[in-house]
Image 1 (tube, helix red, strand yellow):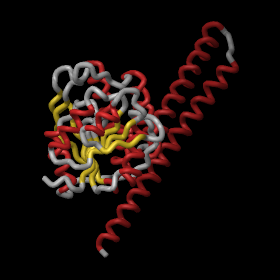
Image 2 (tube, one colour):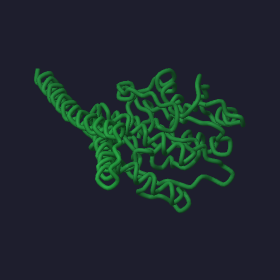
Image 3 (cartoon, one colour):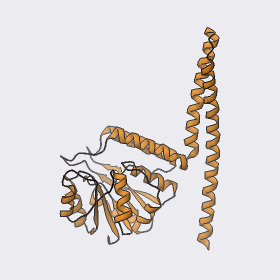
Length: 306
């Protein structure tokens, strides 16, 4: 396979133990443009990467998301991007499978499914459960099942990346990219890959609880424009249910103890009214979004037939 139009993008931070092997593997496989975006590592990540033949640049900010955005927008000048982490958990042997859908014109974004062949010790049981929950939540909210939206092994066209609206600076970048693919109907496919455990002496930069919470919030926040019925509807249900429970308490107190809670009664009524309004707004927003998508599809069909 010809890799002349492919840039291998590796965002890194303190990966001195593994980055040399990662760069060497891809260089030996025929990739002549390996771009390492260093996030201000405190070890020798940058020097090791450069010594093994990588092109090293330094991101102006911090976080994986910022590194990916800046790397693609400022330093990548090739048509295709193969993105992976610098921790030696992804194999160069899977590169062909990742790039083939792009080179054959079958997709513009490819996600490597780590669960297809996850080696023992590659991910803790806790993280596996969290990943499954996040993937199921994504499929429910955004209507696409990408199997492994948190995978760091991606292949995509530079043009499709530039269409996305990405703001995350940290590990939420993969989630944002998946949401944008679903929202903008970017042709996306999933291919099975092997996921390896981190080599001994290599420490992860991921904090499961904190980063997992950020990812969940990002999924929910993005639902506002991609699935408004779920976003506003869930808020409406919570508000209505809270108001109803407070109203039940007020009623029980009045009936059993003859105690009136005027303030709580007002709060209950307010919660129910706001909840119903949010539900109605969600339905209207979903209708508008559906009409908007139908209009865009018709425009694209008419443009394509001209």
